[in-house]
Length: 188
Image 1 (tube, rainbow, N blue to C red):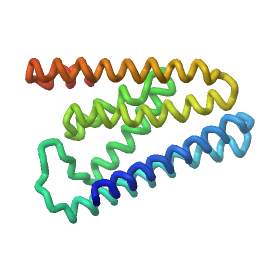
Image 2: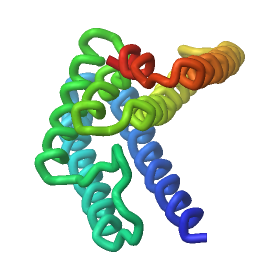
Image 3: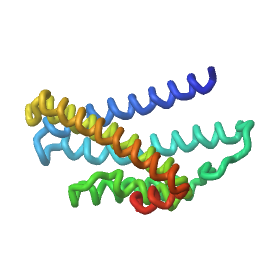
């Protein structure tokens, strides 16, 4: 029962962050580029996300202090140095993904590996993050009339089907070979 409550709390937090970012990006997109509102929104988002990150790490550390089970291989013990690294890495990933037009998950996955996460957890985490960012961007494009809902639904269906096929194939490859190195190689 406690696991379900914890999962619901985490989902509620992610949904709140998603709603904030959706509203922020929508306001930014409808405001005039270079206006005071535009630059106010731009300058407010990074401190907000840093505070959210610090809150989440504080919450994880608090839960960690009350942990009853032993640490497992790949469990992170969050230090403030790691928090600074993940914030800097997140800002860098956002910067380079905006500049180069690549997904931030491509950059966050290797960053999570350097923090000590297992490759499956790093892959799942970066994929989970991509769901939220791509859903927010897609919803904005639909609302602004730059993407028709019909095409968006096709993209979702194709992406979901491709993810299922890819997951199925990788599970088979890892089980058959007994090696995680395939996932590590592709993530890196």
